[in-house]
Image (tube, rainbow, N blue to C red; front, side):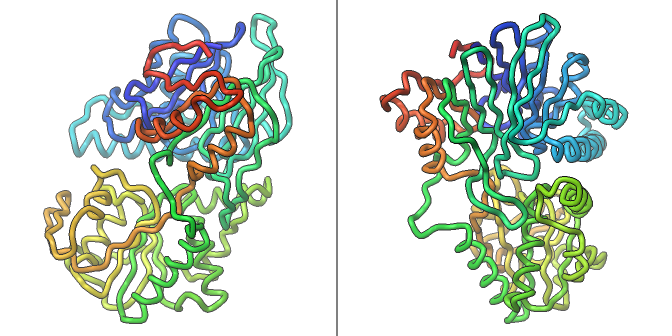
Amino acid sequence: MRLTDLNAEGGIGANSLLIEIGSFRLIFDAGLNPKRFGRDALPKFEKVDDFSVDFLVLTHSHLDHVGSLPVFLRRQPQAKIIASLPTQMLAPRMLHNSCNVMKRQRDEHGIQEYPLYHHAEVERLKSSFLPLPFNRPRHLQNDRNDEIQITLYPSGHIPGACGCLLSYKHRRIFFTGDVLFSDQKILPAARFPDLKVDTLVMETTRGATERTKDHSRSVEVRRLLETIDNTLSHGGSCLIPTFALGRMQELISIFHEARSSQQLRDVPIYCSGLGMDLVNYFDEIARKTGLVRFRRSLLRDLKVQPLPLALAPGKPPKHSAIYLLSSGMMVERTPSYLVASALLAEPGNTICFVGYCDPDTPGGRLLATEPGDEFLFEALNFACRVRAHVEKFDLSSHADRDELLEFALAANPRAVVLTHGDPEARAWFSKRLNGRQGISRVLDPKPLETCLV
């Protein structure tokens, strides 16, 4: 098997792997790099211009995995998209939103290359999907009468996310995709097969993150609810910046359960952003497939309201409330960015980050700012002192490094390929897998360089 990482930056970003095995050529994911702009954000698809790609396997619908899909299909229109049914439903909605964001960035920042694709292209790609049910092997042929077997398994990361087993002749290659081995309120943990593989292609996102022995998801949820309750009991408000796909719906479910058990005060809950539209998709996925534990009726039970128009920088709300808003990294000109500018200067308020924040985003910069120091909301031309509490909670949808290591050793692969992680994360896995009995090779592919596996 030949493997090429088409993500020119390496690490986490424009995720896309070219796999060549026998006469088959497959692409795993087609993402966009969130730190780059214009065509610099794309995988290097020109690497596959000289031949025909048979299939593109889409592991899930986050933009770092799906955001360049229309660009890829423009170059390889014959390629079929292998994905789960929830991903087939969610991916076009995420791409339509990406179109809107790129148009806004073109107008605001003068990026003339934007948008990289249009709404009509997103609509056309729907006919290219070949949805597969979980846990059912599918035999597929290419135009050279060769055959490969593909099986998708739920990976627990977000609805529709999958790991993928390729079986070709006598070789078995397993791709973890992004994976979570713990249950969420809306989604069961990953359900990967108990099997031995020849090659394991494994995500390494949290390889540099050490967790204490007493850490668990339930402990973090309890700590979040206690923090919110303490803030509200003193008359303050809480902002929870959250990712639109998966995390917002998870927190709505957590709040619903907490209020039902009287662990959450009956104050207004305001939600806004893409996540509210995705609520309808989650409800449909739950009804059609049973793969998601979420219904739209939770919003009615919680009396969720749209964001008040009166909020403005430096003008905090008059009444206690919970603000569950995208974006999770408090990106400029998003609802969470605006509300943070209204809450940050008041000592009774709390801003609760529940996921990863890139250091270069406003959320990452706020987490690095000391209490009492000045924080600049550049897009709003507004600065204030950090007097609100700023807290971080670990509700990641990625598996712990020790869980992934245990899975890798149980799979007993001849070779392990490290992907989707920063250099220090990959280094941690490389150190612990090299020399293990049965594992003859641990590869950390260099961007755009083909390696034999």
